[in-house]
Image (cartoon, rainbow, N blue to C red; front, side):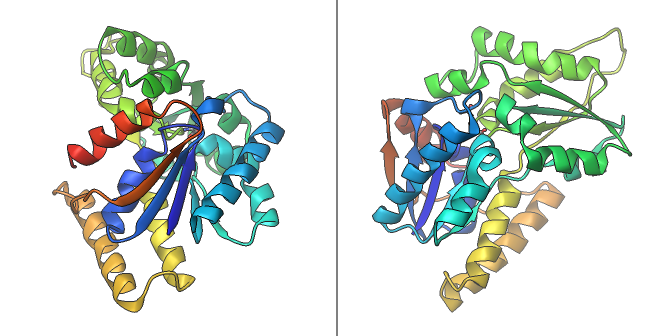
Length: 285
Ligand code: DGL
């Protein structure tokens, strides 16, 4: 069984990509929404939450855990890796694909304050700063919007503009979504990026990078390596990885998502998680 967790519903953006590659697995998803947002909390506080969550997911039968939260990965993955005898898959800051794809040489990163201070992000940023400029902004209020299910409309648009426009003003043409909640705001981000003008004649073509597909791929490789998938499952999953990558590269339809066999756990009000879950898995793809 695959355990997946986040401070709230954001990790569903990662679960969606995992289920695309591993439709036949059993899942348990934990939203720690009684303690959300994690963004401004101390690493010690987040590590304590991650310990409790790991125990809960292991008690439920998880044999691998995806930390579908950039902030928790930054604050606590090293700690829980030392303390628990289970494999953890964390979020990766997608600076590399952004650096390879930018045309203006300016990359924007939207993430929480905790992620932007994390050593993993700082190291990955350091690797690419020679070739390009990296500008950052906290997605102020983004997590709260997604938790409330406000994914479009004037409030979402105004909130998105406040954090996105400083990055576009700085010349960013490629923007990393460094928090798993943010992909749910992608349509608004794209719309507001298209509306952004700064005296330029050409419409601004901005590319947003969501690391979730890469994390899902990495999970498949680790599960194969660890013998957590049977031989038939492993062959099927690896073939789906290849098919998904080819489809992405060619702009063709991705392998379909099926509603997974899943248990949800919320530490707070479960309604936000349930709504987003049905939005993803009842309106498939
Ligand atoms: N979804 C989270 C992340 O990827 C957590 C956001 C938060 O709780 O502040 O960082």
